[in-house]
Image (cartoon, rainbow, N blue to C red; front, side, top):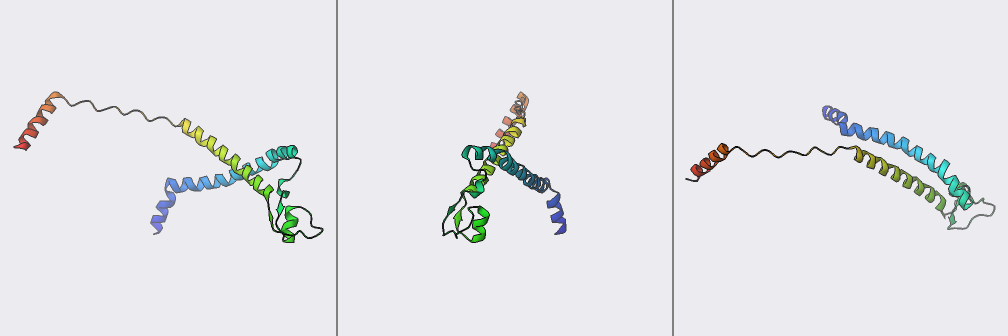
Length: 140
């Protein structure tokens, strides 16, 4: 069983998957930073709200004196729909999906088209004649 596991772990597919997961985790942090530090401030300046995480719709009564922030609502036990958090995560996803699309497109463009396989030359005339004789003898 240990030998089978070793063969599985050393196989290229398992190793490629592990590397992909590690790079994907690091890449996710980069995308999150791009969204939170570069894109969202621009969008927030257009909308006029500096932090999207505080855009919420309360579904239950909000205790008096509770600040209208995500953390304060969570601490007070208020049920709410966190639209701002969803929008931020949606931006993260869209940017990540777009970058992955561009990478896959670039890799597919770099792949070389397989060389066309040349058709085998037709057999010589004497071979065809010998096949006909063989087939005629089999038919007897």
